[in-house]
Amino acid sequence: MNEITNDSSWKKVHELVQEKYGKNLSYRAIKLFAESNASFYSEGDDLIIPLKQKNHDLGDIVVNRGSLLSIQQKSEIADLVRFMIEPKVYNLHLKQSEQNILLEKNHERGQVIDLFKINTAKSKTLSQIIHLKSHTEQTRHKVALKIHEMAERNLFVHLDDIAASLTTVEDIKTLSDLTIYIDDVETLSNSMIDLLKSYLDLTDLNGPLFLVGSSLAFEAMETKNWPSSLKKDLMGFYFDIDRVPLAQQTSSEILELLFFQLDNEMT
Image (cartoon, rainbow, N blue to C red; front, side, top):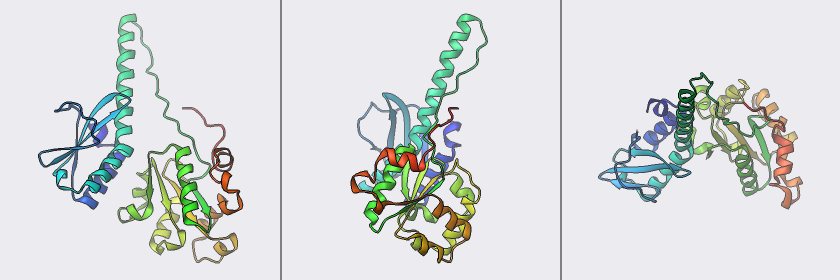
């Protein structure tokens, strides 16, 4: 199915799997074996990852010679596929089913009708970068996961895990369904800071959501030798987590008021 293999999420997962594991992916719409509840299984030398959502069989992802990988590596690839590719395949399945139903109705009634658009709107954040300040990395990570959950993005990844594949602004733009978490902004290389600044200057809210952790106070940020626009972004949506009572640090109500659009426009 060209719609799947031409999708930016497919291309990014394929690139990551090739780079990290040395394997190629392919998609097949027709299952060759009986249904299995396993998240993945071997077929000869290949690793098979069945795609299924809400009782709909969506085909398989085939990892060429993937059965030779370790269990941990197989699980990592399966997680990537489930978070980034499976939702895309399911959306295509829904659109095709919707079109088929409407075309049947149109044929029965002898009328021309418009195809309904499937609403895939998500909760939108007010900014594509949110700065989470706490002296405890575990606390920053906990709040980041909560914001990711509220933003309804497909995959939460640490920048360190994908940094090698990010060399241009275009690389970042392809990761539109991701939340990218930076453990500590002070550990970023100068080249990564420049790349992040160049991307954020585009003000493209359709790209990935960056959640940036640090223990920096406002005054300390101002002294950093970083691009002024990046410092402005980091200070614009700044959450001093340590000043909030522990029980309210991951409060949906507080985070929604601070970082999310209250009236999302439905498209």
